[in-house]
Image (tube, rainbow, N blue to C red; front, top):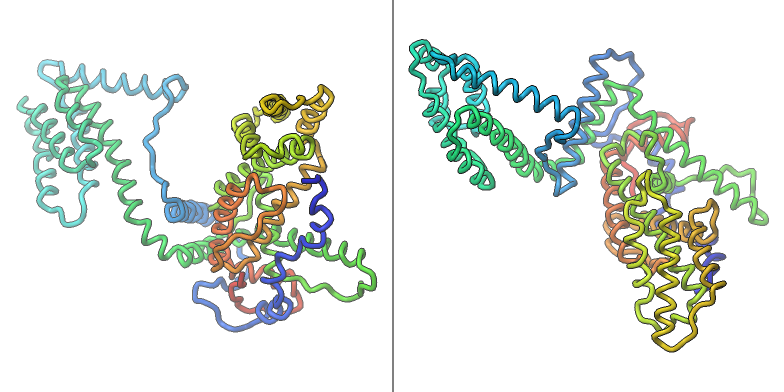
Length: 509
């Protein structure tokens, strides 16, 4: 493909993708955003700023934490709690190991006294009893009563006074009860507990397995909670965020700034187009589509500098958006490499089947981890250039054709290495086409499942782009459902400041 293929048409068609979704926006926008009609009960109402206390601020932070957790459980089918410990060689791990060893050594010395001292052991049994009771579901009265009866600390303390505590019997009861309550994955851990003779080591291992059972119980709860959250997540998140906004009136400041920047970008784009069009009426006030403003704002998130804070309404999806941005950066490099190679040696490899896929297989391993700070992208591109030259020459030799000259190889490797330079024409072109594809995707009605046509130069990454596009559109559409009323209020203030305030409906896609 020639390097400038589609280049001229890109500027003319860059806004084409919004036309379907936005054609009626000029009429809809003022009518909808100035409407004083009632919206859903969970739509945000305007409220005057108020001073907040530190406690209110902390409550808002807890609400945001709850909101993020609920969102993650609902949208991430793989989300679960993992049991993690400090690394053995870390400072925290070393401190924990020393403190724990001192505790268990002290317990062992107390139990080895004559007569034994049981006070610390009794406190451990009390703690174990509370943990076992926390695993029970409502209505499990029989086993609850049994646990309370066997692990009655007052009774154990009386037995200790007469040196009549059956500590091994209590430990065996605990192990058997754990076996009844644990998930099948813990059966082997229970067997190992039964094979442990030393009472101190046994108690230590009991607590280790109980910690694992706590994680199992948390994940079981998450699994059962997920369907409910998925059914009610839109209303839950909107209501929860309204609570945060009432406690922290500044909770939409970054979101307002994000939308404001998108409006300014749109005004600048309209101004550039007007100045380049003959006969344009520069005195008329431009009409901006709220839908287009939001979509352009969402596109900026895929080029966001995640060292700065993301808009408040997108915090729950920050990790997912950042991951998509990183994947897109890698795909952009791959598309650039393939486009450069194709333009320089395309005639020599035109008959080689799936050659672009072979170039992709060369590039992907060398670009792994390219978004880490320690990653040297220039070095990786040099390596890709060397391997591609070798691949091309090997293919030419196999077909009895002359290999690339040294000058051609240096030129090819040089162009690949220059991809990282600012304003590189190939990189800019591929980036423009990726943005066009994603913009076209956002312009589709939310109920429409098909993908827009992949722009020229991106066919080698089409499968990956469609997967990312699907994930991205899902995030955007859900975000609009939840926060649409908040965006409506902000857009009305920024686009129609002279209009009377009223409750706003969620903007359509």
